[in-house]
Length: 483
Image 1 (spheres, one colour):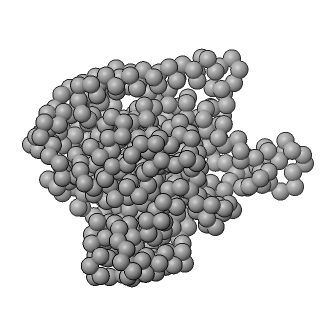
Image 2 (cartoon, rainbow, N blue to C red):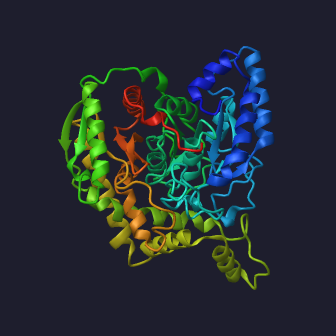
Image 3 (cartoon, rainbow, N blue to C red):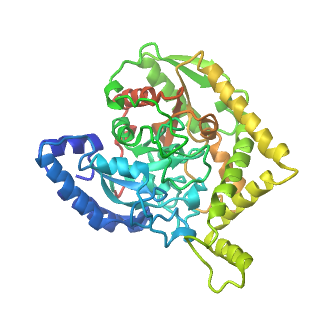
């Protein structure tokens, strides 16, 4: 049962081959047995899951149907869940139980999805390896000595290891797409504003976006259908109709114009990954796509701009964690300043502290114009490059990451080296565009992803291309040894 996709589960439940309760118990037992190897979960919610599964079975018995009704999933541990620990992978929020459900959690629960637990993540979503979590590093099921990617590495590792069919995740600079590439999954970052951020604990508010992780494009379409939509509680949510993502999966790719930026194939790209990307291009050409070389001239400035903007927003967002209202509080503070200093010093990890300090510096008097304002101007140039490119092509294709997953601890002494791994993903966040990573092969036994980018609100187009690609390749069907 653990090998089934969301779509297969939906068909099995509809045909009464098994119940949601039966499936939920199987997966909970599998998580208990196998997750100690991976550390992909922070919290298991067995009682809630069984309760939701029984309710889903009752709804089906009463004639209801739906692709998510009775389907087991998990949430990245920054989506607030009523009465359940929502930690953001941090000691700061280890004792925090959310008093409400995030909109994403509420929408999926209303659709009948069963929450198995909360997945591990880089602390406050700051990282590319899932090594900064206070609960310990997550391991990549394809090789337990390697990282699964971050910050949504817990969700990615759990889905890749067949502990569950799909999970929610978030993407601030590639945190859905990069773990998807490292673990052989489909990961989709929707258009900024497509999925509500209400109840999603913020890292960088103008960049964060929730999305799905699953093994197939079909499953991502199902999960995104349940997540997307306008939310009046979120001032950045966009009131745009949500199409039927599954309905467009079967469309032909004949005549689809795919742009390949020449800047993507620089000296920093592993040549073995470059070869796999070229193989993917050839496969899409066989399906009728037309390939065109394009240019994104300001891509080289994206990483420095991102690592000014994101830490600046983080320093503002994380100022609320002060030991006064909720979260970690130091013992016996001498005064208010001591309370602030020690609560934050004890509650935040090194990577979070580093980004807070960088952000506070960039926003300080005398440096705001030199750093933050200039970074925002670069952000506009990056967006303009994409708008010009999409006048010529329908989607943009390239590698998701410059290298396969690295060994645990390999980049801990050099944070900048880890930051550079985001070179292909962060531009979509700066511009607010939808992006998807799909399996493209293996290098030294480790998965590699190919990234697709599309114009605003064209998630359906990305899913269509990925689905057609998966119908003609078998990378996504491969399972890590031992799982």
